[in-house]
Image 1: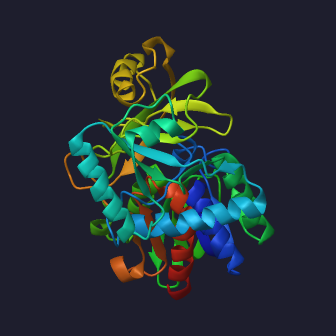
Image 2 (image 1 turned 45 degrees about the vertical axis):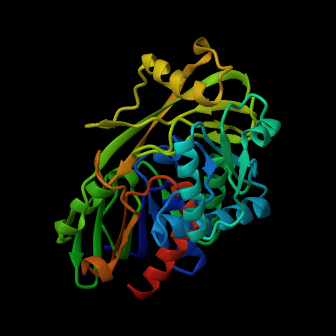
Amino acid sequence: MDQVDIVVVGAGVVGLACARALALAGREVLLLESASTFGTGVSSRNSEVIHAGLYYPNGSLKARHCVAGKRLLYEYCTQRAIPHRRCGKLLVANDEAQIAQIEKLLKNAAGNGVDDLQLISAAEATAREPALRCMAALVSPSSGIVDSHSFMLSLLGDVENAGGTAVFNTPVTGGRIEQDGIIVFAQGADPLKARLVVNCAALGAQAVAHAIDGFPKMHIPGLRYARGVYFSISGRSPFSHLIYPLPEAAGLGVHLTIDLGGQAKFGPDVEWIDHPSYDIDASRAKAFYREISKYWPGIEHHELQPAYAGIRPKIHGPGEPAADFHIAGRETHGVRGVINLFGIESPGLTASLSIAAQVKDMASID
């Protein structure tokens, strides 16, 4: 039976970042992906925003990895000439209660180490963005956007340059825990033995963990699907900053982001679904229009066109407290040779390089 040091399952942005960190540390890495290329799942269906770290509870993995990952991501993109822009974000309030919410977010962000925020008046906000309507806004200058495909392509190049191997069209179908490693079964490939399996399969992470014979099921959290759809408009955005309302349950509200070409897109909203589906109901444009017009009164309803949809791999359900990233190795579940990453939703893109650093450290002691 062929043997390998580490198998990383899933070639989304987090799987690629983990494979890169491990390969650069001198580990023998085999990256297995079920799709025909990298980044076709969760990583291809997001806002491509570099988050600052405002929202996440102090001390959480999301807060820690977002703030550290933001710095690492900007440094990496600058060094590798990955297209990105530190365009900044305005988080807007449209009544007194929302201003109080923004002030709480300002304190929360400070607890996360985000110290570059500025609360500005409506006049100051509209001076920066004339099309904007608000009573006040929180300026986040370190928020930005990135070409996620170029970023992932560069990560894959790093993996291969460091001696790692990526194999596509090879879904992992199961595994078996043995004393000296994990037997990995993948479609279209002979079984192989790995010293360590790093499960970064995103929406498929729970299925991979359940398929490993001998892994304790009590340490596999449930998976809930929270679909978010995006709408876009033709032409250039009327805004140069990202425009965000206050966060809502399970999401950050219907916000306006821009791509590197200057086009605006809106979303995602939150819709809990039972099975993965990327269909877009065009009638949802009415709800989008209501939310967007609160901060951009100049938008016309007919301008909104369906763009795409994504699914967040939630490990909590509707009405439940938001869950943190779940990154678990032997110290958590008691099994040598398995590191599971569950619930890696936003800010997973921003956090990816920092998450990878944690996984590399965990792998060194597993």
